[in-house]
Image 1 (cartoon, helix red, strand yellow):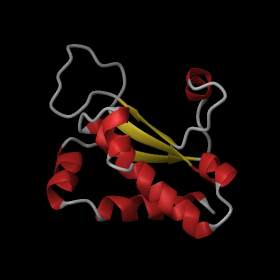
Image 2: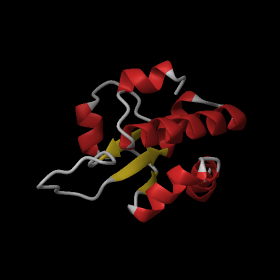
Image 3: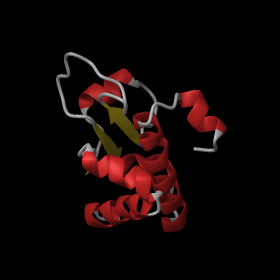
Length: 118
C-alpha cells in the first residue's frame, strides 16, 4: 500500500464520523497524519509493541497552560503492513484505529474505547 492509499483510507474513516465530530476536529484543526513508520520516541515509549497510531496533545474540552506541540493523531503505515497481509483486513484496522485515536481526543480512556470495540 502506498502512503497515498493509506491516507485515502484515513480520510474515508473520518468521512464516516458524525458531522458534529467532524466539525469539532475541523474547528480545532486536529490533523490526522499518515506516516510511513513510528518515530524513535514512539518506539522507545512502547518498546516491543506494534503501534498503529497515537494521539498526541490536549484532549477536547481540556485546557492546559502549556503545550509544547500541536494536538494531532499520527498513524503508522508500516505497523499495519507488519500485522495484516490482506488489503481488506488492513483497511478495517486502519478505520478502527482512526476511531480509537479520535476517541482519545474526545477524552475516552484506553479501557473505555476498548469496551466500545475500538
